[in-house]
Length: 410
Image (cartoon, rainbow, N blue to C red; front, side, top):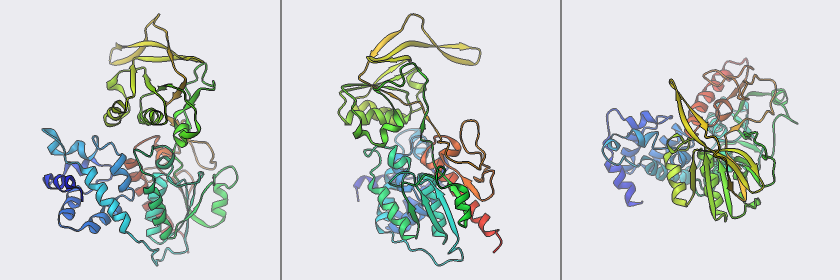
């Protein structure tokens, strides 16, 4: 065991009212986790973490911990917070290597549940339902499970062997996986209901890039960030790269491009440093990797030579702060390739359920859609959020599915 893991665990104050747990979307029982670790009960600690969050091993790596558990640690008010994420990851990895699940004999055996999409939401629901005896089939549009974990987060942030381990665990629980299967164009939700699936869960995420509708956006050296992250090796970027946007996806693209041979990568953002949607952690790591930043730069047009930008400034109008262009400040930012990282929307493959104006699926607080027997959660419902938030909502949906199936006539 790493020495720092023990040292960090011993720093935990075992607060009677742990703010770290309250700051976590899944209320991870940090006190109990640390206590079990120090008592040498690693498997028990791992089981507790897994039962609370089947993606604990993932969240411990990629969560914005400075906003969640570690950001609420009482020690962080005057010094350094307990590195909860490191402790959780160590225990979760150990448990993943030791866990040998078996499909339980249960009254739910033989009751089919379809899961459309194998991202964080789909994996969470699959683990919960399979652990409760249901016959679960996952329909995944790509060749590997994981969704955004597999195709939207670089290897240097999330080792993909963890997803392979999770897949093995799902299969041991009896989960069937149909890769390269898009539900909607060929097989529909109606087809699934016809084949006696008692319920359907939709967790397809947000994979359609949001365009800026700029002149020049269709040029050959322009790429959408979410598409690039699926398979960076098929892109030829050149020496100098510009990234439009300043969220976590933009940071991932910028850092990946440097690792794939670009000599200079610059993020262009129309607001200031403090306005970035990327977490401070991801921003600081991007700077450490050598990513450059140009703030108060708004793109006007993309040309063969790069991006024509205007400088911007903030203007206050009552209680509203607007970002406005500075007249006459237009200038070419030279780039061999340009990435657009301006968020994503859901794909519109599914029919038979109500969709909101933004393309997100409409559900109630438990993830029930407007169609009986069909449930949804994760980014396809909320828009792009953290993995921990997707897990939290999906746990509620899994329980709602079990309650719904239990109420069906035999």
